[in-house]
Image (tube, rainbow, N blue to C red; front, side, top):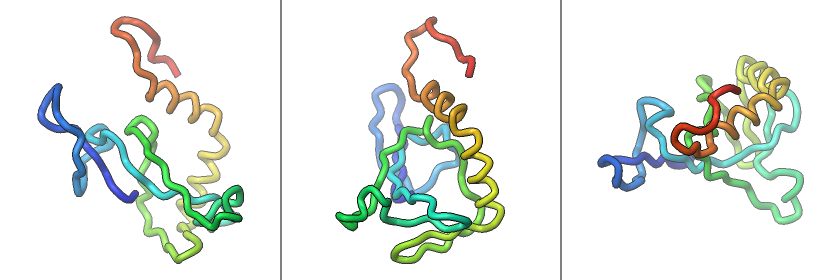
Length: 121
């Protein structure tokens, strides 16, 4: 995560940068660098699809797209990120549930009209 924004000051409050939050529900959105899984515990900074340009990718994510915080230390170099064994297993398990996660995140990020829609995932 590069930066976090949170809404303050009530209904008409602004979304401002904050240094930290006490929970995901306090986040308006984050700006994060994305990494592509390259095998095992390693993730590459430059995705294959943009390797010719040699540029990293970033994502602007609303709070509904944030499903967890990696609790372990991540070792980051100029080209790679390496996660712990525990986090690698978590990544594998989440990949196996990708379809359901996409549906859940889509639902969380869909603005529902008052009284319409369903909260079933």
